[in-house]
Image (tube, rainbow, N blue to C red; front, side, top):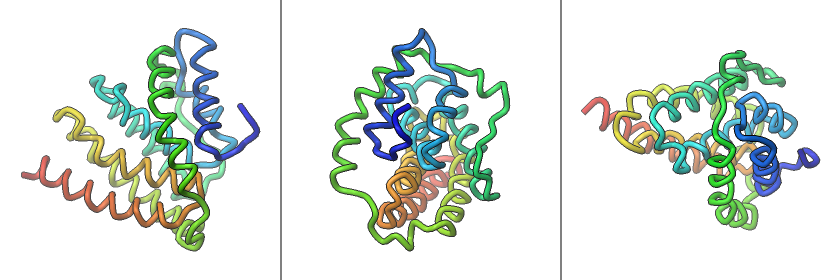
Length: 195
């Protein structure tokens, strides 16, 4: 891992390095690598993975939702260190798929870093982070039923990615955008599942 920097490109560099070290990348190794950077990347990275072509693999969105739910719950309860059960830590993804997803995410990551970060800091404070984590818990509940419609789970995951990005960059404007996206994702999920 680099130096604990919260730059998105540094996070992607770490993931790319992990994907070059073997045939598979485990959830546990990814969480350990991201843990020193705070909770933001631990929400941002799994949500981004779901938004990549990997998210089209059956079962992957629900697995990622479970991981995000566990992490979001720990944020709500104020835990600093993140715990995941062994059965999740041992789950893995092809290193080749991970490396490909990372490369596709680099251009938007560079754009985000150029334009966002440290705005409206009160909206990105500890209380707002805990409220956003609670919203993430509600959003992940919609993912398993939405998974039956191809890529429908990307709505809630996009909102979760926005929250994770807001935590990572400490940007209150992104946090506000995350809440707006969460409302839109909830309406979409209700329309697809409830309708």
